Image: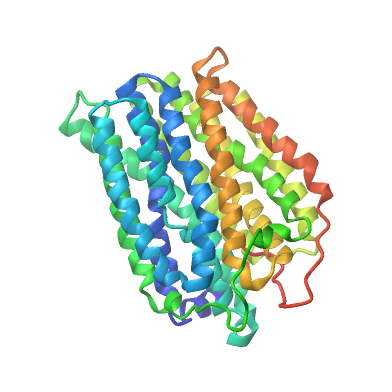
Amino acid sequence: MRHYSRLWRVPGAPTLLVGGVVARVGQGVTVIAWLLLIRHVRGNYADAAAVTAAIALLTAVAAPIVGRLADRFAVSRVLPWCAAGYVTTQLALLLTVRADVGLGWLLVLGAASGASFPPMSAALRATWSVLTSPDSGRADLQRTAMAAESALFELAFVVGPLLLSIAALTTGVIVPESRTAGPTAALLVATACTLVGTLWVAWGRGMRSVRPVAGRPPTRGLGPLRAERFGLLLGTAAGVMFAFGVAPVAIAAYAEQAHGHAGSTATGVLIAVWSLGSAVAGIVFGALRLRAGLVRQYIVLLAGLTGGYLVWVLAPGTGALGAALFVTGGVIAPALAVMAGLVAELTDESMRTEAYTWLTTTSMGIAALGSAVAGVVVDGRLGAEGGFLLAAVSTGLALLLAPGLRVRRPATAPVPEVVA
């Protein structure tokens, strides 16, 4: 814990750590809340999954553009504009969904909302890499900083679903006949958190201290995509993230099948348990000193994810599924940490924020596709179990690609063993 204590004393660190959680609570609740709200308004998971997919897809498309702007003009100047656009489009989408208009309008507003989403995780990783660079005299804290960032990212996915459950329970007492009040309340709170948290972090001392790399021409063309093996890494990430898109839809369908009207509450609890396992594992993993290389660690973790999804298919009840979710969640944060470490090994420091946003692009875009496909699968004959099986197949394909990663460390800038 000595390193964590020192990390807290880094100028601007409390704002990055605490504000980063607040800013990303929306990520932990928004997709599932939109899924449930649109499902209750329109009566099917296919429309709901299509809208959430549009949100995620445009987040993926816009992220590298925002990342390149942040590398060029400073992330503290770019994020507040993103936050303002995001809040405006989220509220517009909420009003439109409640008005029960055509699906086309929902897709347009969902796309606008996704395009303006602040890329907070990439911004935080880039900021920590500067605050713990060799020049800062805190290079020994880089691993701790990235491990903390990974664990706190997962904490947002614990708090978010619990927020949904609390909103569902509270509004269920106030408006007992409404199945849309809970998701609506959760979306309003999550949107407010995104605005407040983003401004808090962007205007804080830590992020304002980050400036564009001097003496380097602006990144042009494909940027980090030209790096050797970076494309293959994104391919493995695609398999992992497709499964991440499938899983919440399948979990929601399972909860509704098993608990009926209480499905919203059960969904929030189950996803929170899943994320809690990941958050705990992230803290522990950051304290380990492993001799195995990152590629070998990545292969082992992908195997664990694939096996975990198969266990979900066989779970005999909600309690058993919850236990399996917690254990499988324990693989997620370490896998993402190793994945981010591989990004750092493969890309140049001058385009590091953009490189992380390309990981976000892959994550959000492929997860959006996973959500859309899962909506069709769980509405069909296989139900939730079909969604769980689909997640296992997707991660298994990533496992097959992973041995092809042969990392060459760039000659410039030392890289930590594991980052998140």
